[in-house]
Length: 304
Length: 122
Image (cartoon, rainbow over all chains, first blue to last red):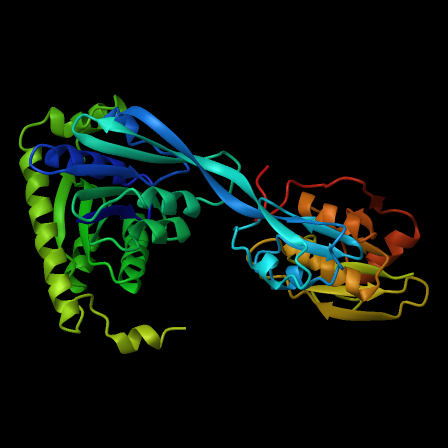
């Protein structure tokens, strides 16, 4: 069972929800936690893991041999990211633009391009009490988070409860975090910004076929438009966390509020049971050939 | 001698576009005769490395120099490798920029003048 906690808008409470959920489940279930927000992994502040090991994450970048290269420019033409350029008898490689796809070396007619490893970050592994804890960390200045999240996800196993704390937004790193998950728990706040970005998250999750449910954080501020939207779109609201000073104070001290405030463990457990049911329903419907996601195959393929 | 000027349009009356890699057009002008041709900048919407690709485009046109507002580090490096002289601080219409160039009023640079756009973090 893989649950990705995501949000279009930053600062809505992804990590709060993900860490509290993991803690609520730690006794009854076999839980692993993956901090996929590799640009600024921060779930460790709340779960306080002890790290036992780490491994580097590398991408392959091209290295061009001046002796073999004929300066034909086919590598430059092929590169979608303009990471390799040919000027006369000069081939320039821009490692920070390279996505490590290897296409340049494939199209090179004279085999002048070799690939070499470049470290872009690392994965750290350890334990947070009973929870197996993994986090990715992208080197500052490196632009590509996705390869680290890919590597991180190799640690997940579908017979456990995996909770993935996704980066914010709707770009590639988020898609990588969501891809293959059984459920997307989308955290939002009940404000116009929250709603705007929630809609984007819902679109992304539906496009890649992951069922969604919403957690409203800081409930009590803003307006009722998030709830209206969820009703119209038939999206379950699975939990509301109030805009509460005590919760905020615990958060700023790095303390998961579930450990200190009564009743929340039960609420998160209930949330998990509902997520399990919703994910199961979605699996059954998609096995029958339909989809619960409110989108037929036709509308998906007719999209540009 | 031909100088490429980053522009928002296709003729001498068009405004100079201060961006190099993501300008709309390059107007390539012979400063003496004012004969010119305009080419659309196909890297305007590149996902990354617009400046690099734009430099490759310019290298193929045979322009000897480029005048623009600013160049980032990747574009600078690429233009430099392509052997183009780089002038920054250009503004006004394309024709006015040609005037500035002829009067030696543009700055020829030997290092990037901005930290770059979307491609590179510094």
